[in-house]
Image 1 (cartoon, rainbow, N blue to C red):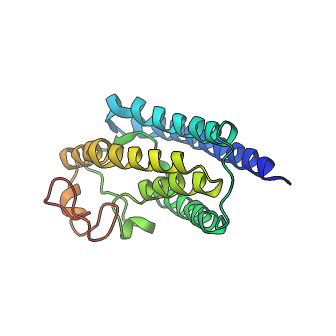
Image 2 (cartoon, helix red, strand yellow):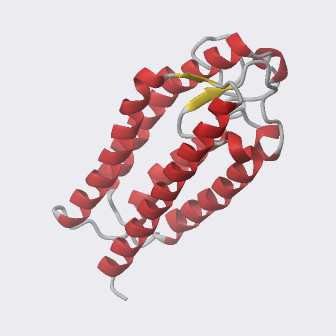
Length: 197
């Protein structure tokens, strides 16, 4: 199988994975609404969805128009990408029906504290960061890897995570429950300067 075949196969598999996740997320949304969940961050969701759509477009354009080729060290991003898939399954199993691409909070509910959530507040976002970096690097799409890693970091730390944590803090005892949990990277202090990440 040629490099091009591997590229299109990989992109197709990841896109099908995303479609399956969106379907599951939609099903979970209906369930969470029936439990009285409140949605937060609806206004910024198109930004996140658009960013992920443009990521795949950029990856394809860089491969097709700029003839990106896998680097000689391609096994490193491959291992990184596969590790992200293992972590994704771990996250999905831990959250179960609470996993969602949107922000849903059931008032009074305790945050999930099992699986990777024993160590980090937002392991799902760490998985996304790993994928947005590793997948383009695997095929030598350096521009896409840099651009969308930076853009995703900005969206997560300046928009998504603040909105999510505000909603949890308003509707649950989130701050006390998660006080000892890092957000994304152990030792990194968040933009609010108060909480550990």
